[in-house]
Length: 358
Image 1: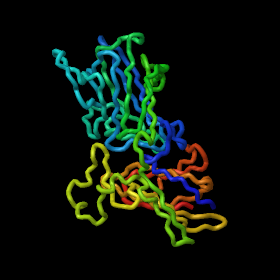
Image 2: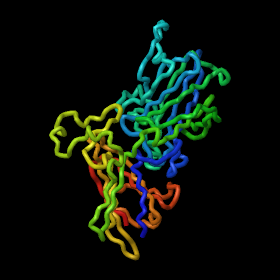
Image 3: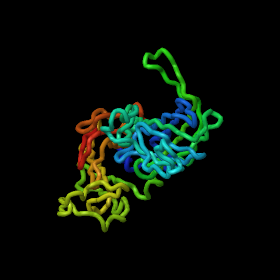
Image 4: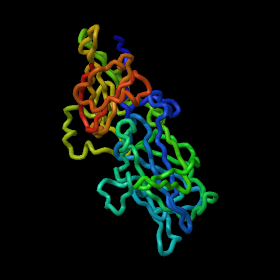
């Protein structure tokens, strides 16, 4: 058996160039605007975000979407989401818009939002599952009422300069493009309706835009050799070397020390590799008929409880895997781009976990 292994802890590490991922070349997040009705000074639209990435999900604190209005549009109201700032609405008398900013920033509502403020597929705190992991949880949506805008397909001006944080940087969004109107089926599925106008925005991820260093490393060992091949020194950069914390430090007992920061700044355990996550590949047995590997994943970031994580392992023999043991919830070969790809998913947080591969 050849032990050339490529391991990716997906939501923290993917190698991509110009927002291209070789393991998920068609992966993207599509933001779709469907105009459902016209109003006296604008329109009501349903905005739907679909995470078509196979392995990368958006974790807490969730997505943030922004854009720039083409004219002097305002947001009268929103259902299922909200803007982070209202802006200057002083020129309005009586009804005050929800947002008057030229470049609004929108976030999802939190779980537990009152029912009359909810919209379908909203209110998950901006968390989106990967499509291959949970397609039903990979969708988020909200409704927006836009004023001081066009009131026909010919007079509506598409928003521009879309941005997406998921939750940090890494996504690049293309321009909005008009597409054929979305079709809808009535609840009894006997009648088809369609949006008055639809446009899409496609956002793709690049690891190099997100950060200059990897966020995990791989170590290796085997039953026939006592030597452990560790992660390289400073494998994830050593910028946090002076800010790390020792495993037995009394600071870990301080209340709030492990509270996540808005900018996702890590609090790392002091290690030689300085990576938030280490994946260890240990060959337990290697017979002519089969081989067995133990995979252990360790979290060294005290401020992050990784949830809905996905581990992607690429190896020439993984198309012959017969069994997963322990903390594996799904093996998604049918959705993989090649038969050399195995996926292990788990929806719960961890400090250290392990599993067996046969």
